Length: 111
Image (tube, rainbow, N blue to C red; front, side, top):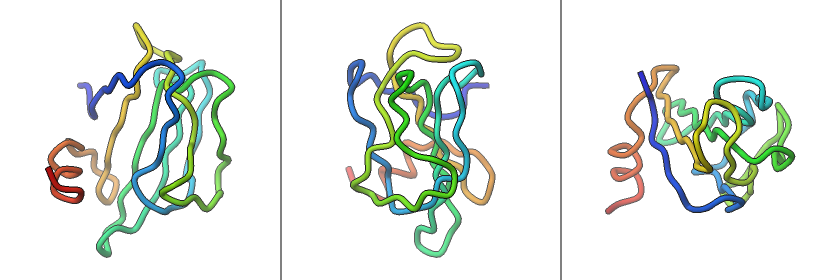
């Protein structure tokens, strides 16, 4: 099952994170997600993890344990891993359970 949403802002577009947090995990291009980062946040008192996948090889700018700000760039849109073209795969997990990120982000950011 495909969990998350795919966005196509264009190859090489910088990827900004959704909130301040700590880098929990990063991955390399050999896996299904390609080059990716998972950032842990506390939003409204709840543990939220955000996933940014299929990033451009060599564009990852964070390491596990890094404290990151909402203004930070984690990498650039690419097509690594199991991908048929440049896009950002974006996912959200609440307390470790993946959810549909679209309604969550719409609620937090507005329409």
